[in-house]
Image: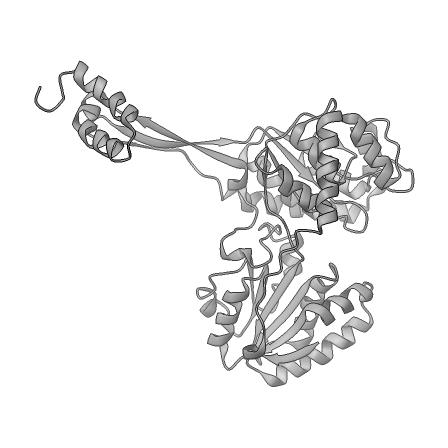
Length: 430
């Protein structure tokens, strides 16, 4: 892991939108599903997953069988994590509000949940039951009535789905699950097929083809984001444990070869100790091959003059995950304006947030923490504006409204007010 001065570090935001060929493939897949429905989904599932699907929908018997296959300790941990996640997101709920004025006008806002949401859950090497909880539970707390999950079938001619994914979905309360994946699943959710009703929003991570498909259907439906590779930044000083830092950096490096792991520190001694520790821990990491490429390509230790410069670096990076391993982390957290999730102290490992603490682990990547938030209850709500003007309120404010409308050249708008004011004899000069 290389050590360098922050002054020599080049800040880049590399957003992956796929190659021209990948984009064209996704467009063709989505068009086919839109035109042919189930037939296209079956064809692409056989082509890409090697599975001939009879039924898309997961049957109740398969769910029951899944419970018999999962480890009991996993189920206990999953249920506690689900409790923590639900409890955290309950605190994000909003209330409608109304503002009645003495002149008889009233404005307000109502809050309505989306009616139907699609959750994409990856399969294969990226099979994460925790992400099922993180996507589904905020939607449930928001009040979404119909939550549908899609996830790829097992490859090699089998229709089975990872039982841990199925159990996580069932525990989260999902009643509608389908064994389809890839861009064809995104298209089915967005446009609907004979078997699957269209949704209002699609959330959940996936490979490049899923990400491109989500971008393609945005506007027909809403989406959560175009997720990039995972990121972690650690801000630390001499009080931090090098072994803890190295372990946390590698916890993200093992995700994929494009993941990034960065240490920001004013301590040359700590920088060297972490560099050595990363090498030691890499040697015994099960996903060593992936983590090595991630560290070599996107791993760096940035030396800064002091913690204030370190904070400036972090706010420019706008990382997905930020760990503050300082003696008094709360003294600095108020200065962090760009970060998806902030982990305070030596014992708040990023993995605590990934699985258990309660805050959502679906976070903005690629520097988008500058303007984006973690997935939350608001993502599954829509707000409706309410406007009520009494006759007296309109008569009192009609002249101002007509003035603004005519300034913009919209006479029809002005006349919609004028006709009411004439009827009531309230025009100036009458």
